[in-house]
Amino acid sequence: AAGVSRVLEVHGSSLRNYCTECGKEFNMLYIYNSVGIPKCDICGKTVRPDVVLFDECLPPDVFDRAKKDIYNADMLIIVGTSLTVQPACSLINFYRGDDLIIMNLTPTSADRYARLVIRDSADKVFEYLMEREYDF
Image (cartoon, rainbow, N blue to C red; front, side):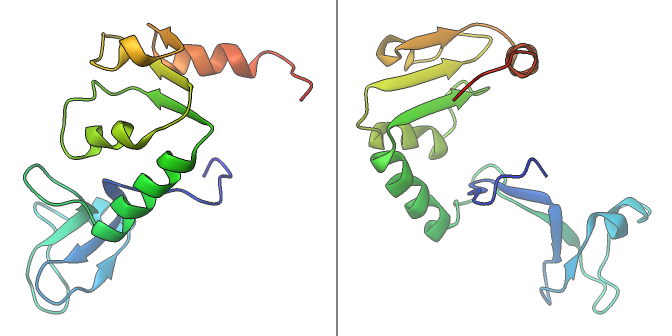
């Protein structure tokens, strides 16, 4: 929606949903219009969001691409995470660059490695940045 063409949804997306039995896919409108727990219109089983819940594994292919991208990144900006939930928080360990930026309301275990730490809400910071004109 923001115009970025390559996004790795490490934790999935609630915009996609699927039947836990037959795998049929459902959009958000189907979920929105459901009463109670959404059920598949084919087999009657539960429809769930395509997200990684606690104690579930991250998709290996997406996690591997994220590791590779972070390893090759010139700059890493981490926004709005305490860096405490595994395994996603371990992705920072693959970063080899010098320009780590962390934006979070509370301290993280990686703050000491960051070139810049911003203690403010992401919406305020990005709104501030969007109001400025930059000549890149």
